[in-house]
Length: 195
Image (cartoon, one colour):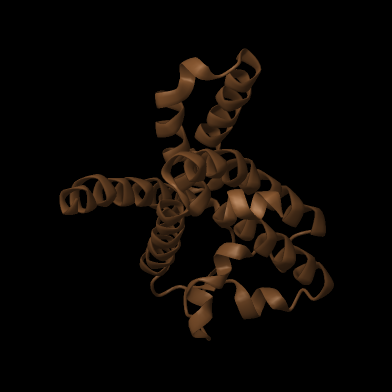
């Protein structure tokens, strides 16, 4: 309960992903119902695919590897973002990344019949925000903490490469990075002028 109060966006996002992962292990047919579809059958498929991991045809272990890799971005960088920028801003980063990823997928897959899953665009939005926060706080971190964040940043860079995840995923990941900077710009430039 402490994490839910302190980091509600990151905690709820993580729990939803775990619930979808468990549900898809029980019923593999859920992939067709909730994954991103280039030709969506239901309106929620524009968004629900972000919470899904693995695929209907991939082995079960792939779901957990996919989810774990995404959570390595979502949790440490998301907590850093939510702690320093607040829950409201973190929620907007999540929402804009979710929408941009969905739109980008529809554009890239136009005319094709494709299915996709994963929250990595949101993960990359959180990584971008987390890295900005790290730059401001780096001198206050322990050596151990610095090593962990350097490792996670290196892993995020490797997973951004098209030869690792493919061009489609790379474009979706970049849409996540852009999402953070859009929210950051609006927060600093537009809302700051209102006060």
